[in-house]
Amino acid sequence: MEHVNNAGIGEPEDSSSLKERAQEFLQRAYRLQMSGHLNEAIENYKKSIEVLPTPEAHTFLGWAYSFLGDYDSAIAECRNAIELDPEFGNPYNDIGAYLIQQGDLDEAIPYLEQAMEAKRYATPHFPHYNYGRILERRGLWFEALNEYKTSLDLEPNYTLAKDAFYRLQALLN
Image (cartoon, rainbow, N blue to C red):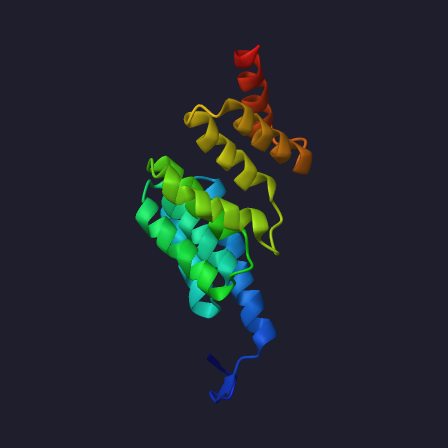
């Protein structure tokens, strides 16, 4: 990408300034999404990707699409993220979660398993919780409890896993 200097002469933009600009759009998009401005968030995620495509920007763009119920676009963005970085766990989990929302439990499992194995993943408790949801829906309650517990072992303050674990445990007693 080029930018024009004060003399009007185009020169290549260095990678650190591209990263900074892309990150600014990404952070703005996240703030917009969290405040409920989804369309503006989507535009800023796209701007971030235009400046410098990253797996994070594609994953977050997918997440924004999921807020609109557009799971096909959400899954497509997560697949773009995986193409950029197959070691990044978030898009695998997110595809699994979107497929669960669509009722495609069998198709979701391999994505959740890949998320569990991902080398770069800051929130590895998510796929265990999501896999637990599938197991619970299938009536495999003890296996589901185990996944919820694994999720809690990885993140003791994860409320969704904690609630699911105690709810299911109470049902079994």
